[in-house]
Image 1 (tube, one colour):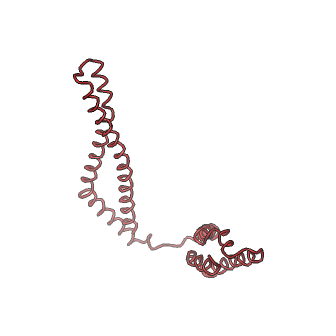
Image 2 (spheres, one colour):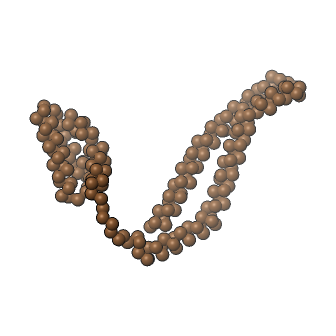
Image 3 (cartoon, one colour):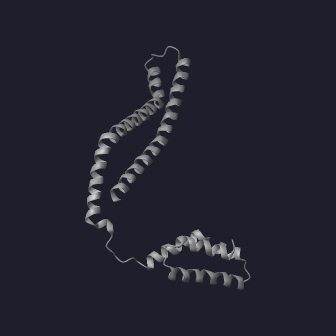
Length: 186
């Protein structure tokens, strides 16, 4: 990446910084390229040393936020109308979630727990089979062995599948809660 492209992309990524400070930062980056040129490095080598414009922009933004704390300004979200709007949105979301979301959510969680319990119990079926061998109730050992092997395999697969489904359910519920919080905040 050449100097011009690097500086252009860096300028784009740090556009939230005021222009005066941004020009100073870009001038410092340009000095790095000049010093690299004096050391006999190519523009690509200097760009690689700087870590790329996105990485550098992230570091510059973090550094800028740390050295230039924003002063507390009254925000529109603290006004009476926005507070009232948040309360109304919260009440409406509560009723909507209670009427339309709670039932299906409880049903989905119930089905998930049921499938997980079935998977675990099928995985533990060899223990019951060994118990039937000990108590002498086995009639056809070879046939029962393959049935138990099949049930145990299905149980392990179902349990593993439910672990992955559980991760997606958790992510889905978390995203829905975040969505609700964003609606309330406005």
